[in-house]
Image (tube, rainbow, N blue to C red; front, side, top):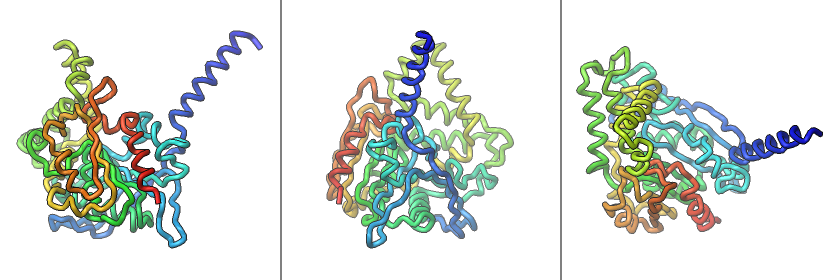
Length: 358
């Protein structure tokens, strides 16, 4: 064999091996589950509420017919289950012999109400879409698992950002449903302070935008740009933002690029509804109801849930089997977005799974 060709073959083999190790899991299966006559907490109803989902692996049941290996993972505001099919998340967790090995676990990645490919305002109802809240989203997820997928028990319920908040609610509303809980990048308290303020800024920008036209716009209103700019501002840490945008001109360039992408792919009504949905989130009064072992993980450079508030450390003490970890700031953390960098916290996930083995 030609030496140069041999070298090329070796290099190609190494590259293929790396690619396979980075995605050593089967592609997810996608599906839709329709809930008939879904009633929202607001009193509004939808004749058909569509919930889109992705699954990896196959469900297993014990001798009593109880599901033993289901893992529910919930996404953040304006996101979808698709956001987890990335090297920094799925590539660290779902592969062979990784913490959530898809050959052993049945992983469910739903799109929440108003998000992804699930029913949402931009489907056609616009501002006439029912005003959903986090309680509605958790109710729909529960029905997807139990009625749609036949899952009567979860090995683990976890989520990031909004999905982390949903995890706290799952623990309170369905305390016997899961073996373990792991909320990431969230606080077990009502939305308030700066977290409420940045959401309110975006909500007001859209609702008070004449071009929004009560939700009946033909092109995306300028206020969607305000929403995108605020998301850029809050979603990372100042050190990283300064590194990627070290001058006035570069900052404008980076911000414009980020904003244009959001405007192309998102919808103002969807964003408005997604941010307003947090109005009913308040797990604080019922934290003692959570019976499953719970591990909450935040990062020190999270602008949305800053550790300086002391809320997580104080409130998690009320959870009978709860504890919390704050990942220290480093060149590997990404502010609020650290929740999707599984390498930062997957060792803690492994410990939680071992502690809750039955």
